[in-house]
Image (tube, rainbow, N blue to C red; front, side, top):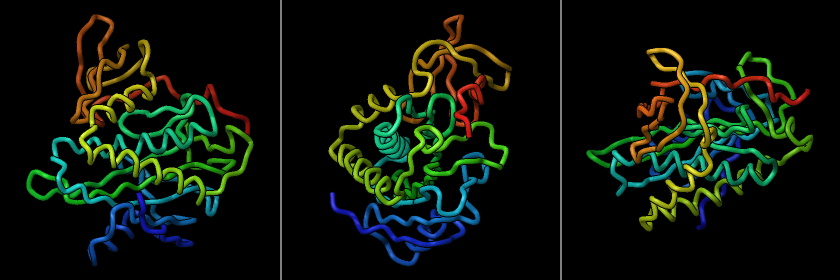
Length: 254
């Protein structure tokens, strides 16, 4: 799929905000992308900031107009971005997985995060902006975030952000083509195959407290179904359950 050349900026408040304002002024082509060397107000999930040393990492957002996609099925857009990221980064290191809903992990450490903002018109998604930060070349993290890691910390190599971005967009375009052709079950299967903690029982915590469970399913809505040790199925949307027991045990040395 051909897509526009990414818009490259030195510094910006937020690539997603820039993309939203650009699209508000005039509708853009699918996969119009903006990337920046530094964000002054980058955002993560749960309203958190995103730490990124200037010029060290890959910070980008792209837009899609999936106007025939029902709002009830919008989670497939998260799957597309997550799979594109996982496939690309798995070329450089082993043990790269997707942590539900769309973080990318190396072992039990966070390599990149994505925030997707969908606009709805009636029952359909009219516009989707996917904003991602990939930790590429940063060697130290100072924000106090519990488990960040960069590709450079993992491998000792330095990476060109523009080359990694090209690979991510190429893969995202391929998965988007699968969506357009109705192959959503194939996308869902690939997503489930690449999940963090996809096998065995692991610790979680919900409003009732900690428990052990295994992933039983990810529903088309994005809801995660966990089976606890008593065989009971517990279903959660994002922010209703926490992963526990992840942290610093696999930290590479700075």
